[in-house]
Length: 142
Image 1 (cartoon, rainbow, N blue to C red):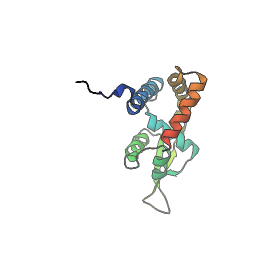
Image 2 (tube, helix red, strand yellow):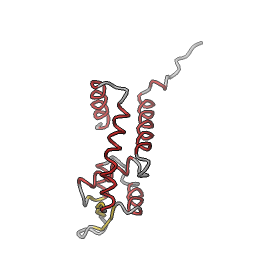
Image 3 (cartoon, rainbow, N blue to C red):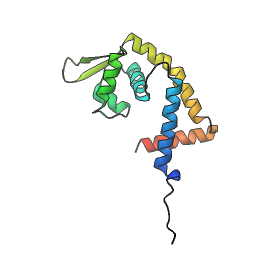
């Protein structure tokens, strides 16, 4: 008697997880000199664009869990890359700014992260790259 065995190697979830592993490994390789994670880079670049953002809004904007982003922020604060201050209007609300060192690190990482994107997409032609990014955006927005 034969049964259909689920081919996890072709499952969307498995392939997305594998692609994520490749993405993170490539990021860590290209940015090794900085010792930052992809989430930390996302936080730094978001704060470059929106200084004084509160922790909850920041978590949402980088698609990270609001309950655990505090520990990521604390690590960046210990490294001297950002500062956290209570909002004068609501002391429970924490506002975030990059330090000059954090701004310099974020800007210095940009060329590395651009190389990450090129390496990740290297196996694809121009049309495939556009299609993949369109489809990933569609999946991420659901």
